[in-house]
Length: 215
Image 1 (cartoon, one colour):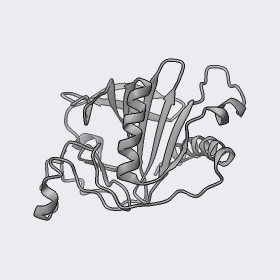
Image 2 (cartoon, rainbow, N blue to C red):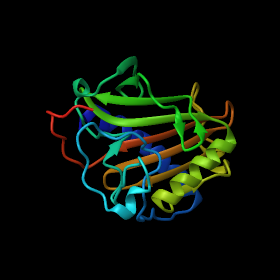
Image 3 (cartoon, rainbow, N blue to C red):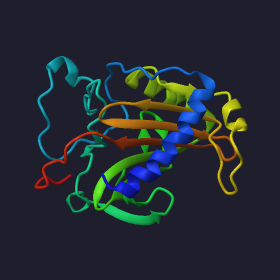
């Protein structure tokens, strides 16, 4: 992965670890789970799924190592191989180019989403970000993640954020959860000031996909 992207992400994780350390000093657990937030399937033929799992329906089955894709797109896929992308902006803080996808389904189960973003670095897909609004929706998304990813490291009191230094132009999340898995790191944030929610899934530790495939 690009060094500048790793550096930016390392700073972000350090801040997250500060919050987690203040709250629980616990370790993150990994559990078996099935996906329910990656709704769309890749164009190429997926691996066969036992008939008993097919009723999980149009949702990709994941292993306890974490998701290998985000809405049907594998981590580190080439930008040119993904159809329907529309450039939004370059994020200087995260050091990534941000895209949205035409025709995106803006729902997560029954939760209405405001936007789904695709983050790229050096032309490779690095992370997917799901955005929504409202404290109630945060709690619903949290329930989904806990069910599918297992216990994570969560801070819902806002006390830890209040102890962190104030940074001009930056707001600490008042509620948050994180999961560290082999194939992906997952962060769920809720910002009290405007009620915004960010669910970020970042690819980790997987090989580049076949560059001949399109999605």
